[in-house]
Length: 254
Image (cartoon, rainbow, N blue to C red; front, side, top):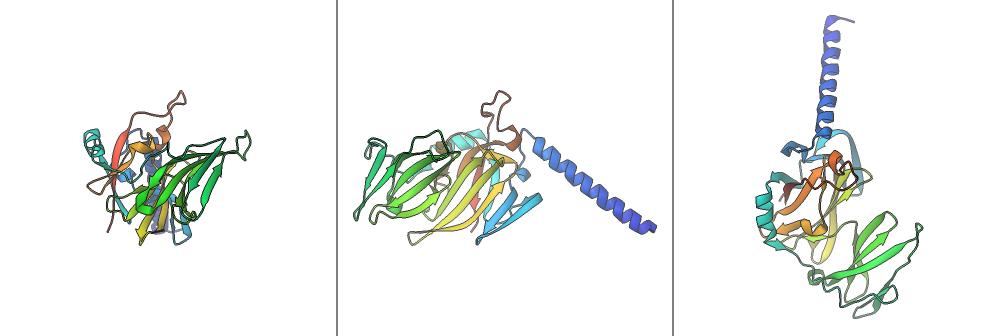
């Protein structure tokens, strides 16, 4: 092998080693920097999924930036929500929730169990913008949110996380912590003439959302706000959730 080829191999080996070292440093971080926020593990578009073994930045759909707690708190005072949480209107009776729609009634029936067949439902309110009831379902190591059309009684859509509707009423972000893959899983939808259209799904590698559903929100400025923690520090050593939060905001790109 000539000296030029040897030099090329050495440079490639060195580059690979430096990249692997940088990835390890990123993964070990307790506090995130802005370049960490866009790194994804997969991207699903048009029913096709691409997986990434090395760090890959999401360069479309959203801009994501770190913010301080002061700005987050100020924007939370101007949070926008289209959920009417009238949880007492449709109470559960003997494990059954009955939702009266114009054309028929819809029921959700609990199945208490210690096995994988368990299912427990909660009525959490309605979204008048979509003419829909919202039902939260809890299952064996899983959960979802289902929208039921208040006119037809048919299922509009089911989301893996709560559907946060944007201030302009045109977009939906569902974002949750995937504790099995250690990612922040995000689904993005658009609302087109009352129809909900799925645009993409991705998993962010180095951070996970913190707190409760109510801690993430759209504000009047058109940004989506939430607290986060570094993926490898999602849990404390005692098994409780890390409460040392950072804060970000997400802006859909035109």
